[in-house]
Length: 343
Image (cartoon, rainbow, N blue to C red; front, side, top):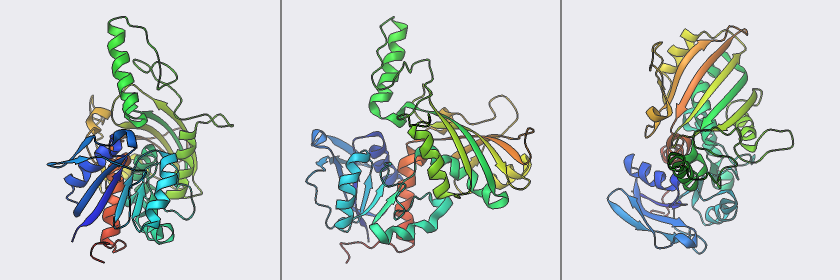
């Protein structure tokens, strides 16, 4: 028995990755549709050895479809996510729109798998922010052992997190610098080539950006509402994979050696932590990989029960597409998803 799957936002970075991950993991697909905005109708995307022609989202009928993997932008999901759910199609949404809705679970399968049972309330499950996902995958096993009191995180986020146009801007600016072309930022507020930008998303009244706010509130919802979280989110001139420098304070002792041993056994985590040049993960190493890499595990000597970690993951895979497909697999394994065709 297979499932009828709709990928919404199929022409974007995450949508294409969703199609790739579905095929790679041999998800039980009996029928698949690639859906996007009207301007993308007729474009072709790949699903394994097959080529799919993109259909228009505005008039797509979700009745009879089992799963909708959504990544079209928050305002679009706000309209079409509930429409799909009302038609009986379970929605796994990668945008920010539904994440903090108390009736909609925010799920990372390695961290809070039991939350998927809440899908029966609204028929929608939210995928967390890409930076939140990799952080909680790395921290959950440690939190289970010693309870985290406070997290201070600085991110180094790739341009793919802002879409195709952002990646193109990095590429064109980099080329332009070598031939002395003028730099004209469009997608980013400042030059991204050979630069870093300490702003992701809009500024809020308290001076934090919305991306930083997301990391705080999503971590609390997924991991523990009592944890204190503060973030600084920075865009860097890389194409794929986000990196994070994380300082963690625990309520009880947690040594670097203990953390290293715990993380080596943790689901979804790859420890690469050799105290030598190159003995750590970088964004290039993580690109195309499914694991969340943890390196530079060391004691923080300035506080009691403190650790420093360096965490890297492919933001298009574990930070988005892979996590969504893992949620779909979780629904199947827990018998929370029934094929409408079979019914």
